[in-house]
Length: 222
Image 1 (tube, rainbow, N blue to C red):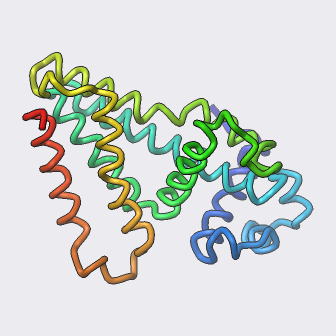
Image 2: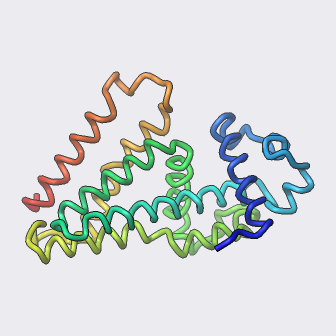
């Protein structure tokens, strides 16, 4: 499907904002900076994105869409493999995604923090007015549970085919698995590409250890 001129312009603005946020950080970035990076006036920028918060949510929505797409690709690739292999591959997919997209990992963690602090998005009294008016924030709520649902689906498949221990609760295990890699994501997000690895430990070693631990838990149920 061909994009409209407005969609192309919005995409260019979001990409410009990603470069500015990556360079200056969200708090330090100004709409003037983003407009200049996009090659448009600030008036034009505001006609597309009514606030910096809305722009930030647009990037978050894009990030989650891309992550969900990666999940679907992984599931399709492992659909003939035992469920446990797909679950572990999904864990690897999420970790790789965040490692390759530092800004995306930051905005996703920030978004899920907002969701937790607002009763899963239902209590909007803690949100700014700009956030409440953000269409992207509303759209995010439609898809933010998808990575969890897809993981639960594959754990259930693994239990059914015997590759995952039957004593495990798919929902609980999904949350535990998600929580177990948040620390890894925060470390690589904070470190960036050009920083010495945390405690001089190669992130790949941490990733490998977590995947092995996840396999042991899924197979043994402990």
